[in-house]
Image 1 (cartoon, helix red, strand yellow):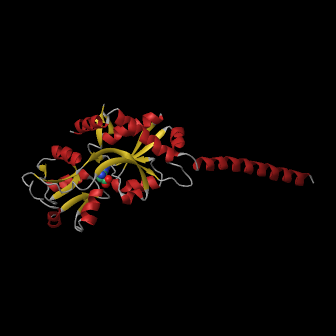
Image 2: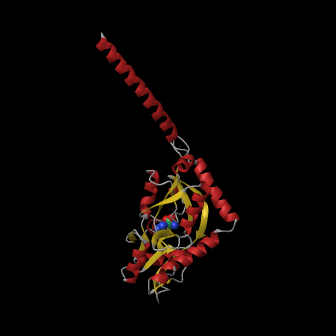
Image 3: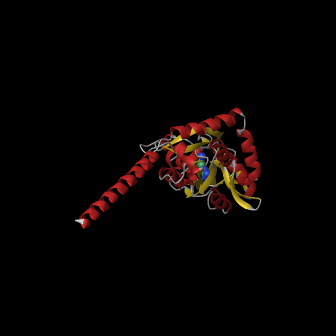
Length: 277
Ligand code: ARG
């Protein structure tokens, strides 16, 4: 009888513990189905996904002897974090892995000169535009007239960065199947220098920085690429029944509005261009 009482007591205690655990995991669930903005504030960290090989937007630079991710988008990331009262933590990866990282919630936001387009809008939400640029063709010095029309690209060895809007333009819009796709823009520049490709379609600011760093390269005398948007916006995972991202996007847009009202964006770009030189 004593043994039975003890057993009942134990079962009761176990049930109470379980219900307590149940309660706390219940509130965890509630938090999981909570507000992304609050979660970031609670964590004290804004997890930013980027691909830091795209100067002047995002690139590595030694600052006071320390390797840092800097550039236009990085400055904006700092401003967003400042307004939230949190610090920035970067995950640097290949550009074509960024949307997957958002989906898997490895990062809270992507700031990587990612241009909003219809395809991407199916899977992520974009903030207001941060900055607008255009695309150009990078060629070897002396070959500035190599590309006169988009059709010319079909007979040339074209280099593009995987997963980008430039890659989409070359492969899907122009239907070029043999283009060389690499993960990093600097590697494309080396391929062009070495004569393994004839032309790279990339952003104008990015092209200008890179031709200053890779000898023998130049921007082509053509408007080819101009029709493809090259703008940057912050990308955030779409809200789900688990996480509500609406207030997070709203707060990013509030920071962007503040920066635009203060006329900061051009200055950020000038600073980034100087840092990248
Ligand atoms: N704007 C282009 C796109 O959205 C290229 C971006 C590449 N960004 C980078 N960090 N490498 O696809």
